Amino acid sequence: MLPLPRTVLVLVAALAALAVTPGAVGASAGGQRPSVTVSAVGGSEITAAVRLYCRTYPPVVSAEGSISAATCVRRTGRAVPSITHRGALRLRFDRPGWRWKARYESTGTSSRACRATRTMRTLREGVFRLPRPPHPGTYRVTLVGRGAEGRVVAAITWRYGTGRCS
Image (tube, rainbow, N blue to C red; front, side, top):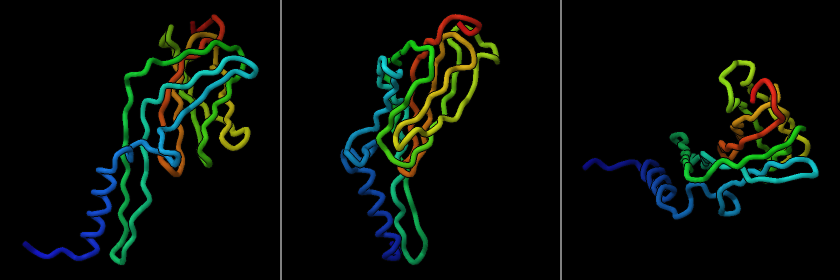
C-alpha cells in the first residue's frame, strides 16, 4: 500500500468524523433542526413542515488546498400545515443572515396566473414578510431559505380568500 500524505489523512479523518457524529446531520448551533414559523399579524401561528435541510460544514484548509462537505436530510412524514389569512404573513427563522423566497402554486388550478415566486423582504433579523399570493385562492407555498449554514425547504398551505385560483 502506498503511503498517503499526512494532509490527505487528516482531511479523510475529518470528513469521516462528520459523517458518523450522532445528530450532526441536520443539527444546528443549538443542536436541533431548524424551525420555520409562519404567522398572521395578530392571528394564528403555524410551524411549517421542513422538507429538506442541507447543512454546509466549514472547510478544512491545508497547504494543499481545502475541502468542505454538505449533508442533506429529507423529512417527508409530517403533514403540511395550513393557515387562512387575507393579508401578508410573517416568517420567523432564528438564524442570522438568511434570505428567503416563496413559491406559490394554486391547489385548485394549474393556470400560470396562479403560480408565482417572490423574494421575501427582511423586516428585522430573523423576521421576514411573506407577501400575499397573486390572486385569491388556496396555495401550496414552498419556502426556500439560504444562509451560511446551508439551505432549508419548508411548506405550508395558505388559504387566501376565494376567487380566480381557488
